[in-house]
Image (cartoon, rainbow, N blue to C red; front, side, top):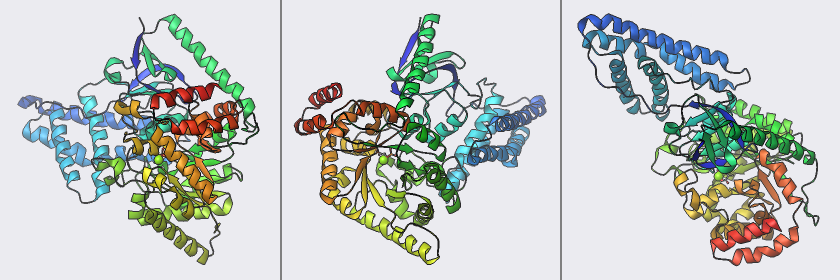
Length: 576
Ligand code: PEP
Ligand code: MG
């Protein structure tokens, strides 16, 4: 009998995947104290050293299997673990404990880990403190061998469905590079950055599937049905057959949408809509081109900072930006400055996620205005990239006009410095702001006056307006993009931009969600930036809609105070 595990689906254009489960173990393996008989000591030392060697051999094998095109920072990550394994601090001290105290190998390793963690935690340097994660990875690998844990290697994942308690955005990038077919997590919600990234990388996922790590078995074949937010296991032949056909239907549909690649996104009554793409990595430009996007409305640059030991320098920033700018061949590229923090942890700035409520903490522009050297490095690279194409610079998460003024002063200073040094840049580079907090939305006219363009970040705007953590699946049912408060804030921003004659776009996930597309148009937005995988579907939808019919509905939509009634109106708008 087929068993169904329910969660929340993240449809990445590809909604279905079938594959065997790889369980990504999280958390540390804990062992009980065990003392040895005197005669067993040397045998135990041998057993321990063999486990260390075996762990290193596993890592070397993994390193060889990683495809050539994998970014260097991921290799760096594995090299660090290899170096740690070779370091005497990990391998020699437990041997001493086994010999001198008669501890079992597992117990000696755990004692050593605890000692080292204490040292890490007492370190002044915030970055070094975060190295404890690496220590845990390495210790867990040795411990897994000692306790005989027979789990599949998490790196052997091509074509597999990855099951985990949770995944960071950095994990998701690594899994993508390893060819994962789908992701299932116990926690997380569809608006988390991990889910957004999965969507953008074209990996279907089911998040918030509670019990997944205990109910699913490593190696068993499951169906991931993101469209229905379900994971099916113990499927009989006819169910598997149905989903194999489903995969073929999805492929055929995607193929048929390709016919619209060069067609304009124009409503039935002739209104031109501009469709841009959101990207996370320079590699995404291939899918951007396939989607027929007319530019990039949001380039999330924080992924440059993940899975790596060092902060990226100016040249690395520039190289990434130029790849995108040149790949877009003259189309606009909106580069958003660093938005680390909240659910995008960064080893270099643990304080951005270590506080009780990181979503309200030192995130995005707040971090940049504190760590101005990091901000300036990125600004210089963006300005240098602007010499080679239509580059636009965008600042995230503003709440105050003074933040905007402070950031603009830094940008002006760097423009001045680069021009003084004779470095080619576009001195008139358009500078914009993301409006994604209620404070910024309510005072949108101030921001519209200060900036060349605005973009509405509905993912955060909804989170902060409705006080719903976007990455917490237990409140996902309250995350309502068409809540009257959200609609009114979007409308207010659009009006403010119209009055100031400033362009406005929308770049939150709402823009690419077929359910909300008519609402977004009804509110007067004509430039929409979305995941490349959603773009052709959106274009098809737009070509079937009447702009003025939608606009006529906006007053009714904005007056309604009953969220259920609004949901009904939204469904009707889509049908008309
Ligand atoms: C948003 O908040 O809507 C947005 C596009 O930015 P991010 O999802 O990266 O926070
Ligand atoms: Mg945001």
